[in-house]
Image 1 (cartoon, rainbow, N blue to C red):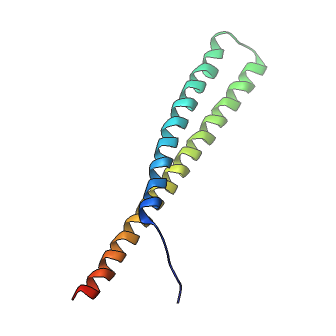
Image 2 (image 1 turned 180 degrees about the vertical axis):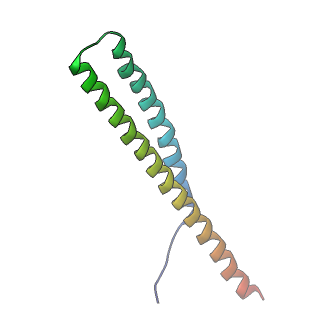
Image 3 (image 1 turned 120 degrees about the horizontal axis):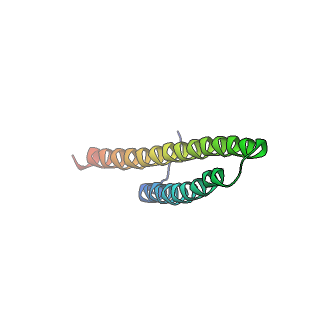
Length: 96
């Protein structure tokens, strides 16, 4: 039988850390995106077009990272919740 030891509060705290990180990353990415897109006003030509295509791909990648971090945080939150609920249910078994 598997031995399990987990601090569900610690797991839940990791979700909070991820959520805070997501917020910081979103703010940084959004700020940088505004600056990079703003180059369109002062930069024209084929190199500028290629650069803007790269910026668009970068933004898609940043969105993917954001989504994956959110999914990771959600999984941690659910795992912490389930560990807590199962432990409480097991405790009730012995209280009669």
